[in-house]
Length: 300
Image 1 (cartoon, one colour):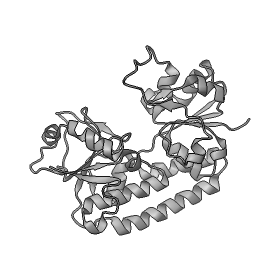
Image 2 (cartoon, helix red, strand yellow; image 1 turned 135 degrees about the vertical axis):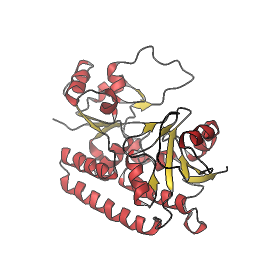
Image 3 (tube, one colour; image 1 turned 120 degrees about the horizontal axis):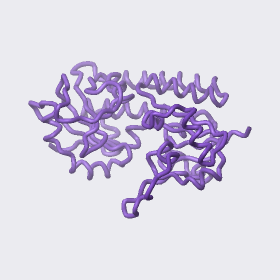
Image 4 (cartoon, one colour; image 1 turned 90 degrees about the vertical axis):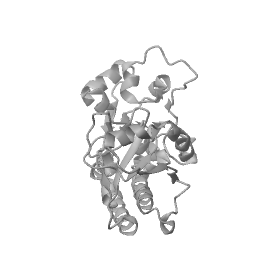
């Protein structure tokens, strides 16, 4: 059977490119950070829901299962994928892979295998990279990629990590409904010498949420918005609600980030996020190469 991969995860698309498997990419999501020459050759299967256009009266179960974005189901069926890669959609849906594949078959995607990944830690990211490589017969490339990633990140932590102070850090990924980012970002915060307020999965916080430590630093940024867009969006953040939940006795420092760059958990993305975190923790002109490009200070 011909391998035809539709990746509806920006992370998975980058991993396929890193493994030199781009010749098997039959389609991708609109948020994939891929080179222009590859982009023009690969059909885009998703798009954001347009707020100016009424949403479809009813999304199909397949559309809900595959992506948080608007999926072009007609184009997807035309591509006849052998594999569809998603990120966290089975986690959200509660379906098993077998149940999901039955749904795909009933909706015109027979014989399509669904691969869903949902890494919670940096180590999970590495394991998932190796799993993608193993699935498509590139075990050696996967192992080399992971080892290179580990070594590069180790050097970055040595250069950018803080060795004293250990600031408490919270990452706000959505608002007005306040959601904190955990998952691999918490691991990266720990690697650079900080103390994350959230361990494990992302979580929504409520007035009765309890946290043991008060954040010294808040990083704010939607994963889907650029630095400039997040600068504008941050005006809608209710800081007093945050302060109340955490019982802040002192006003924390606020920083805003470029979402697609900061949340990118490909090998390159993890290393860049480590540098951003290190620069934010230090807030030192000698370590501010990415300030104004991928992160910036938010005035109190």
